[in-house]
Image (tube, rainbow, N blue to C red; front, side):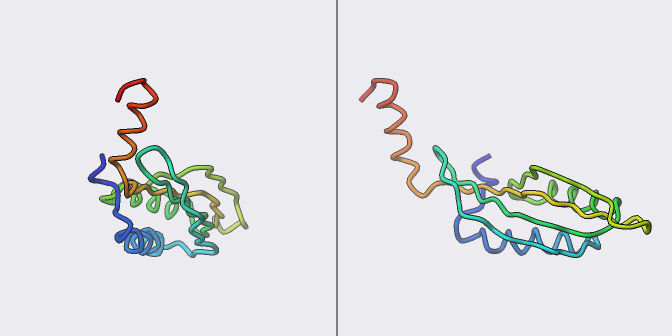
Length: 118
């Protein structure tokens, strides 16, 4: 699973891949806003707020395309609302990607300390 996490250098390329996946699905981006990275135990989480406009089928293609990316990408807080009678829908969501923390060795040491080991 760690291999599927982009390195910090690969994150910019992954953001382009996410955007291109949406455009290739026929969606129009109203918002694509990467937020502040959230550090976790051995990885970091990068949330991206998105707002896209398209037909239901295009939204499905986009979500399927995200799942097919070689890196770990998850989708959260999905809200889909109809826009008008032509079948257009607006989807708000948070897309998250993850990358390995830069100092994995210190994470292992801290975990051992928490367990009372040296």
